[in-house]
Image 1 (cartoon, rainbow, N blue to C red):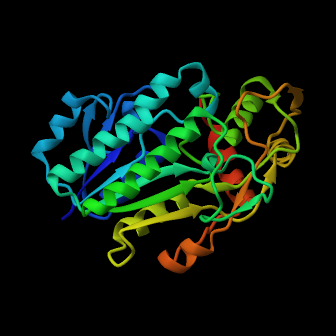
Image 2: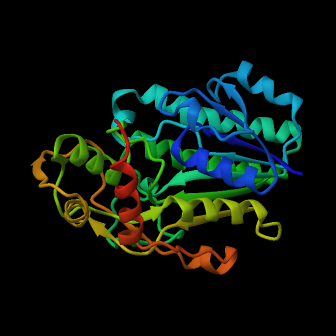
Length: 310
């Protein structure tokens, strides 16, 4: 039986990963400050430590465990919010990652899986990006993610196998429908259900590469089980397909039983026009592929969201 640290297991992605690991017979410990997550999201059987990953006192509580791997999901996840509080964004993302890497080095943890983001690419001349595309982050959040990637690259020289997963736009059942600062699909869906009106910040031709939560969990699980890969590697977790803002809204309108009005206003600072990801590398090296089309995933999510009270 292996033991893993999954940071952020009170949140959308972290909870799903922790649940999968526990279901496979592993022990899981999590750290979460509950800033956007909720205690009830933490899977049964997961050991919960409340606090910030960048807090040394919180990290000291981990000394009692021997981890087979660390899966670092926690962190402030909104580009828009990173502009209003860049110091907090730096602490909760980059500083937390450095301190966790240093813990892994001291404790001899052999594998570190890091949740990075498509936001590191920024806007590119060619929208279809691969892991070799030169990043050009547009927000403080994206800068912090890219900086963390470089820290992982250096720490991989200290005997830690470091795997970076650049998540594109993750969506699906379990997403926080109350958080209107993160998750394009969930934001628009929440507005549509609650107000029958969608307020769009930015143009309708912006686009994203949407990856369903179950496919993201599978990518993390395959990364954790990969014992033969390079000591440092970066993978796009993407579908290779793009959906415009207008297409997302049309999908929501089509699957809800009432009329939804739409209003477009000025965009937010640092927002990307859009990129979509080449996933050939993760397909080849980890034998991963997305199993859900955007239509399939959104239909499941919309059906689930209509039963919520938010």
